[in-house]
Length: 121
Image (cartoon, one colour):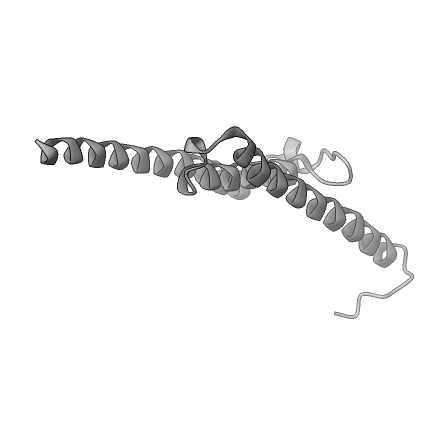
C-alpha cells in the first residue's frame, strides 16, 4: 500500500519535471530562432537605445530564470512572503544590472562613435 502511494508521488514529480523541461525548451527555442532569423522590424527599431530584439532576449532570459527558481527551488510551495523576498530581490537586482549595463554601454559607444577615443582594438 505504501508502495502505491510512493509510486503516485514519483509519477507527479516526473510529470512536473517534463512540464518544466518543455516550457524551458520552448522559451529557449524561441530565443534561438529569433537569434538566427533576426527580423528587421525587431532589429532596426529601438526602445531606450536598445533594439526590440535585445529587449525580447532580456525579458525571455528573466522569465526563464524566474521559472527555474520557481520550479527547482520549490518556491510554489513556500509562503507568499518568502517567495516575494527571493523573487523580487532577484528581479530588482537584474533590473539594476541591466540599467547599469545599458547606461554605461551607450556612454562608451557614444565616446567611440564621436571620435573622442579611437577604435584601436
